Amino acid sequence: MTICRIHPLSDPRWNAFLETHRDASIFHTSSWLEALRRSYGYEPVVYAVTGQGGELVSGVPFCLVKSHLTGRRLVSLPFSDYCQPLVGNSDELKELLAAAKEDAKRQRCKYVEIRPLVSDESSIVAATELAKNKTALVHKLDLNRNQEDVARGFHKQCVRNIARCFRNDLVYEEGRSEDLLRKFYRLLLLTRRRHMLPPQPLSWFRNLADCLGDRLKVRVASKDGTAIASIVTLSFKDVITYKYGCSDTRFNTLQGTSLLFWRTIQDAWADGATVFDLGRSDLDNPGLIAFKDHWGAARSDLIYYRYQDAAKKDVSSAPAKDGSSKASVKAAAKRLLTLVPDPIFTALGGFLYRHAG
Picture 1 (cartoon, helix red, strand yellow):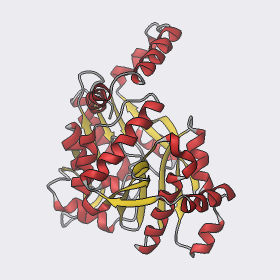
Picture 2 (cartoon, one colour):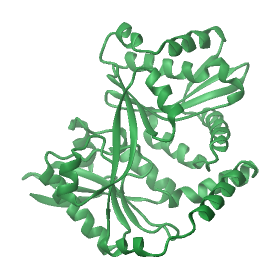
Picture 3 (tube, one colour):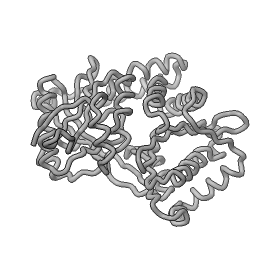
């Protein structure tokens, strides 16, 4: 097989290949990769197998993350819930990842990481020398059924919440205007403070809206002129994906988020979508997992794999640091995030996220 490296932002073969591949997602697209490049400076590359006519047969996209704080690494893909390798068999995956590993060694990367949505773990580990690094869950709701069948899968609490949101006279808006982005971002700052995490920079969401165009929607629920909940959804082919969500907890009883999810499902049906992808959930977030379960979405494991450069493996033999001291510092840093003013809070996110991909 012929292995090559292509630039997905300028090579038209990449988007053409995605349109015909059943496993391609919004995270594979050149638009998503361009938003990553603009926002964080990550340079994308696709390791591809080409046919006799030069057409793409298989491909795995990566971004090279360069950071003086967290080191270099080759990731498929940063800030993406998953990125299925678009290959026909394990031999193609082995050859493509071998090329990626060689480049990573030459560029002194700490590791290579892939985030497959569907994986045959034994073949991945055996063929590529990758090891399991992280496990999460992904939820998907099958919309390729009549609406009554989908609704019957909702938990009774979910049904009550949908009914309640309509009784509360909430106003629904959607689009990608600067006004909607601002409403979303105000709620995002509230949510990230609650979780004691820095926020993604506003420029990231502006770049997403600019690069993805009509494939992105900011959805906002308001009460008496005040935005109370917002989500960002992404669309590609017959899949609509829930990517970001935030809310003002003072208005939780009004069920703004339930309205936004229900309207997203209705839009998906109207647009002919067959899957509502509710996105990734970390295992230490049982509340989010239960929320997605209540919509009748099927859950599956999402496993991230890494190839750690052999030169880096000896770090495990170094003396261990005091775990309790490290935990105390981390807890203190999180508490500090809840106290700093918004300009500093957003500046921290803008600085840190480019090093975290």
